[in-house]
Length: 213
Image (cartoon, rainbow, N blue to C red; front, top):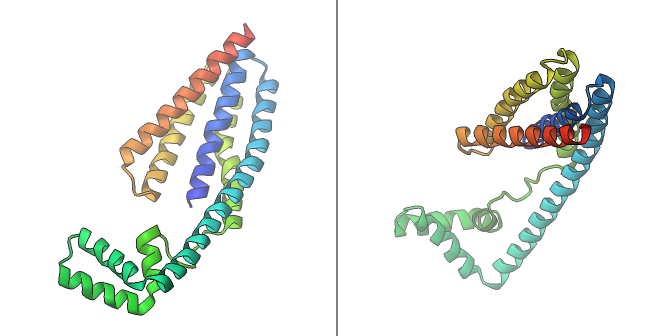
């Protein structure tokens, strides 16, 4: 889901920046459309490959962390026990309950418990790099269709303003979705996403206008 939302968001933003920039330089609808298609194709491949590499790197780091934690438990079990107990104490649990909870969790599965407390992920629950790449590969072109259609279908006099409006609405949706998935502040997520989108389109339009003039 994260890869899909971010892929769609990047598709919207990247292609919007391209078509708005080209529209600032020329009124030739064919040139604008072709540039948007090229950006869509290039972005789809690069996003999928980037997601694949990124998730694989994260997966390798998590595997190394598990191996490190296995050795740490063999070398100094008591230290790892105290680390977990301290984490529970930091959460406001009493000394007696923290010790009891630690004993129970460590007896059940010391490796899973210490990896979760030290690194914040579950053992053997790794994100698939193939699934992430596929989600991004599908989502990027779907997101990029919106600015491409807006710049292509609206009349010359309003197509740039219409594309701005369509992109802002779409970025509001993806910004909200990303905030929900990340358990972050929804308002800040939407504002940050929309602001970056507006800046991208304004900058590319100004540059395109300067080049076109």
